[in-house]
Image (cartoon, rainbow, N blue to C red):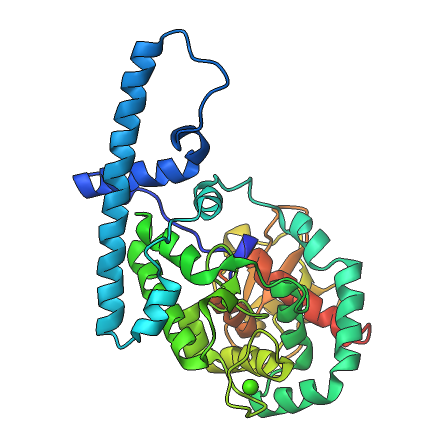
Length: 371
Ligand SMILES: [Ca+2]
């Protein structure tokens, strides 16, 4: 459930560089990021200031050696803890070999400064593109019976399941090519959210243990999200479902399990079938803009009294949800939306407002023009 817009936001400013361990860790990660320069690749011609460069190179290699030793020690401790948690030696040796090193690409993606936050309009251009809508309608047609069965069981609309499927993996097409354990080890060793990712490493090892799958088959996003619904390993244990009852919770290749796991996630987080995620609204000229925001939940009656109207001029229709907020993500003069309880459920999946809005709008388009 974590990719790009919905990737894990890693806070900065950890204490990782305040002690020797942190220095060694950072040195080793720098070595990984700058591997070609520090790996001893011989330059085409000797530099002019050879003596000074040799001294610098010797220092770099010395730092590298110490840092590698530090990672190696850290990895041994991780393996010991995995064993204490009941992971078999077979899985530990296979998933955490002594040759394992942090993945430079994962570090690069994690350390990359976020781009300017996309406006909702920009986000919707690709998240609810005509291609994604038409593909989603095709998928609903081809999986109708299964989606109906899953939707009825978990009381979640099939269009919402398919919208999440489309957003997370392009309807199962893109699930990530990173070795998940190695990616999570990389992020656990890096000092920014070590505890979180360390916990996810152990959960990933449990998946290997439980599903009897080789470590090389556990592929996912650079942040360790797995399967067609892009669950983190801990979410896999909380929400993955074996809907076809073949003994595997297969969110990688079995659509019944992918759809049911997605629906189960929503159901367990309070999804209300029949309730909208959001509705496009028109704000009256006199609207008090201090009322905007997700933190201002009010009754539908309140918003109707404020003069909010649907695009067709009608009042907001009655719903079960009594906690409705009004947002206008791109500012004055841009589309405004009344957002309901189910919008917040989508935000429990991914805390991005743009993501939640895109799922609400995409699922609406998948229902067809009458919705
Ligand atoms: Ca299954």
